[in-house]
Image (cartoon, rainbow over all chains, first blue to last red; front, side, top):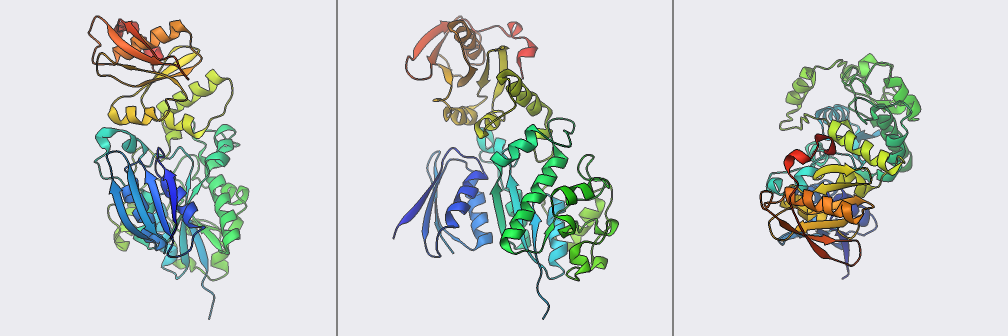
Amino acid sequence: MSVTVVDARNLLCPLPVIRTQDSIEKLQPGDAVQVLCTDPGVVHDIPAWCRVHGHEVRAIKEREYEIIIEICVG
Amino acid sequence: MPKQAKAVALISGGLDSLLAARVVMEQGVHVEGINFFTGFCVEGHTHAIRKKDRKRPKRNNALWSAEQLGIKLHIVDIIDEYKDVVINPKHGYGSNLNPCLDCKIFMVNKAREWIDANGFDFIITGEVIGQRPMSQRKDTMPVIARDSGAGDRLVRPLCAKNLPASLPETEGWLDRDRLYAFNGRSRKPQMALAKQFGFEDYAQPAGGCCFLTDKQYAVKLTDLWSTRGKREYDLDDIMLLKVGRHLRPRPNFKIIVGREEGENRFLEGYRKRFVHMIPTSHTGPLVLLDGEVSADDIELAARLTARFSQGRDADRVTIEVNPKGSGTHSLDVVPLPTDEIPAGWYL
């Protein structure tokens, strides 16, 4: 299965959320998305956006200054 | 069975838009939220950049509102289209560079386009007559409805009883008796309604939600326009105005000085675009130079960089200078004494 990668590094919220939203709009339920970020606000904002739109956050991986969020499109 | 009307609510993340959406939802209308990102939204940016705030709980209040309401929230990037609102506001600015009335007209117009494209029936805003001096007055309410093209498809549930009936009321989608007649700057009616709906911990921004209302920010944006000789900007410009100390020692350039590690890290992302420098003999800030600079300008900027480093009291500080492209070199400079930095240099 292919994974759509959204590179939102060096973007501040809500831009990572908008980039994620715009990417997911083109995908189908069950598709996988990986969002690369640096703004720590995404740890709250992307899961919140996923909850109101019915998508599932599968994992949030945090390195020192990089965050990877894995999403399954709902 | 009567049709279920559909509305989009402008959700800012504040209490009024939260309540307005909820009032309409109470009447059985399907509501979704829309939030516009202009690039000037305060919404946690400085918290995200500054390291000392990185552990502070942070949330996007518009998303928080949507969760409280149990509705979808569509966040729309209007950065490029919004430039004309900032640069050429038909109705002028507020106390700083805030084009509040034009901004509201623009956003309602975008919401109108959205409902037309998505088969929704009307638009909800949290406006209250008299709440804000520029955009929420009795005489500006019809201007917003008219100039946005929304007309009677624009509903302000919190003050609807003070206004002519809207389309949803005349169509019977909304019962006017269950809408409100709030008026003026008092927040008490909103707080009482929030309590009635069980909303707690809602956002209460003290300084507004837009950097354009901020005096210091407006000074920096005005400086950017005047030194470039044209009123234009891109997203990087307006983001950088939110970060660091800005000093303009000479008309042809300014420096942006990171104030702590988080800001230095953010500024690092702009190294390829600017001449930049950093102390190497002492701990100190990353500094960007914005403008065309001579060797003499670089020397002055290096002395300023030394002044903002831990070597401010040292005899000499070594500064690594990175021109755009190649040619990295070091300068040993005497930190510029504080009394040789005129207050007028600070933007």
